[in-house]
Image (tube, rainbow, N blue to C red; front, side, top):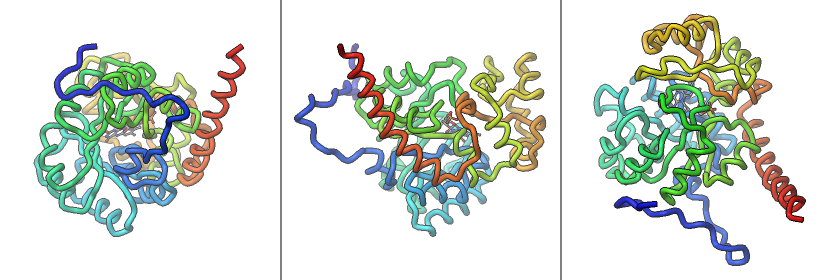
Length: 332
Ligand SMILES: Cc1cc2nc3c(=O)[nH]c(=O)nc-3n(C[C@H](O)[C@H](O)[C@H](O)COP(=O)(O)O)c2cc1C
């Protein structure tokens, strides 16, 4: 593969026997105990959820995609006051001006993910203030641009994940391998992961942490209405649909009468978000679009964030050992 300026090919791990213990780079960048990140989700990723995740050893993230600038500032302040490790997501396309970026840079935030736009835009400002910046990428092209811009890491987001999506869908399985071949920056895998088995798969493909949206959206500490959480629990792996494939607001959402109607007519998704709070907080499932990933099919209960993190780490270790055992059986 041709190596573009600024990109370094991924170096495989040294052979067994010469391996030295290393600090996981995502843990060093974030201050979290475990490489499990709660996804930023508009209106949902606020301090109640983020603090529950961070207290349990994961990394809570605060959203700013709701556009509720004052509320988001207060949520960031609450996390700083709690003294917990956390991060903030800056969806570049949706930021009205630079003020929120400056606020984040000055507030004592250590870790930021940028998404939906060019990471080059605010990178110098954020780096000047000593922040670590990962960019969310849905394609190899976007990953290459972000690496060239000088980001510290990437969140590699597969098309099976919930929320806004690239219309050119690429699964996490393919995307993670392709991005791993491109760069040796730390990678966070997002899309389709709810437990230790998914986490082990992501690490086998080159990830150094996982980000879970749908799983934490339906956790006990998530602020959304019980109807939304139950709809995630009830959904099977075919329970989501992609709406607005041809527009610039392509989204993966739960199948409801509202979303399947929209998908059939190709109607605009963006205007359907006007009543999003009625869905999120009043439980009116046909008021708007209920973002969620195919991973909804793997979520079978509403559980506290601490249980999710504890069981994911235990399942991760078990899945790695099981994979090795199965490989051993196959060796003959
Ligand atoms: C309800 C919801 C809202 C989301 N909002 C955002 C957002 O504001 N910014 C962002 O970068 N990603 C957002 N995402 C995508 C998540 O960050 C994450 O990549 C995705 O949920 C991973 O797939 P999973 O749902 O299978 O875990 C959202 C996802 C969901 C389910």
